[in-house]
Image (cartoon, rainbow, N blue to C red):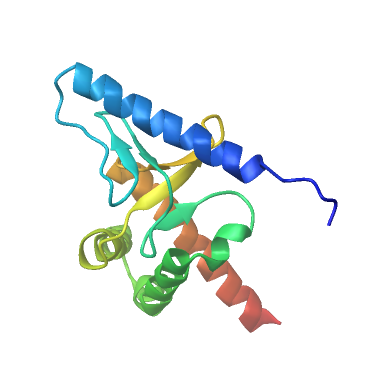
Length: 155
């Protein structure tokens, strides 16, 4: 409309590509096996993975509401909803934790997804690999889901 070319998205993409490729060069020069995987656009090293674009089965954690409509998050909400009654009726904390682990395994192994968080400093997605961090985020999501369900029933 203004006649100006908007370059913000291009600059963001270039920043991510530079970071991915610099990880690849660093890892190759150190004779590590960690290389850029062309299929996923992902750079890996021992500490973190930079994800260029979340996949359809990836669950993304980011502030705001824009992430709610990501296909992986819709799948995740459906999984949580399917386990809601079982979790709500669980008698012990151990049963609830086991249900949370089942949800995590469903995403990671059976649906071939990942749990991603937004790195504000870098401006890219990184994969959560620490299972206790993942469990904590999933447990928070389950609690928030329960609150929404109970609020609906109270109205």
